[in-house]
Amino acid sequence: MVVTGASGGIGEALAKEGLKRGAKLAVCARNMDRLKAAFAAVDTGQILFFEADVSIEADCKAFIDATLEKWGRVDVLMNNAGISMRALFEDADLKVIRELMDINFWGTVYCTKYALPSILKHKGNITGVSSIAGYRGLPARTGYSSSKFAMQGFLEALRTELLHTGVNVMWVCPGFTASNIRNTARSASGAVQGESPMDEGKLMSAEECARLICNALQRRRRTLVMTGQGKLTVWVNKLFPALADKLVHKHFLAEPGSPLQKYEV
Image (cartoon, rainbow, N blue to C red; front, side):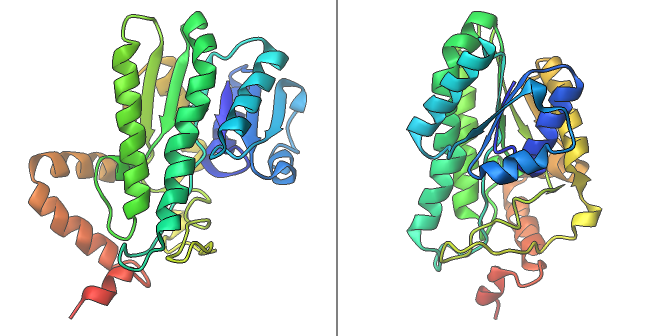
């Protein structure tokens, strides 16, 4: 089981849930010290640690090659690494949107490309950790929504290509989950925001999210949309898109320090 972005949040929880279920792991992150610290309290004999930036194709290839050398195969690829943003498109430096696409979308493409031969051989599973933002564009998160729409389109096309191969392709949308993705979200300039506008104590835990994802993985589900709010958002957006525009705008306008306040008269 290969997990990208495993030094915290959902990625760390996915890797630890995999360990509980008997998986041999390969995990990567950009910061090796932080990655190893996340697993300091567990038996690391079943884990390959690798420092990689998934926005760099050569890093992704090296990570998958190291996994194959260590464990001999890839059965499950969890494309989890990702970053977010919080800024109006008008104000955002284009490098911010490019960075999100490089990590969230291209990181998924690169890792999938190099893991695919082994996954095909063993009829395994490719999973993308997406977001409700991959179904519904979210204001002040244009780059994030774009990257998740692209991820889901890529995985849907790939799933259809592989329909009769025995490989399962799944994308999951956790909804609002207590993780570090909002703390590392990019501002308009590309700087790390460093704090979350959400009340993390009221959100689904990363551990519960990982448990649901692994259950869906074992059932070889096509998609998994979590939380009542997430499911409602998907269906309202599909059936009543104009109403969804208004509801989503209202929701994000109410965030503390919402960038949308700039446009309010």
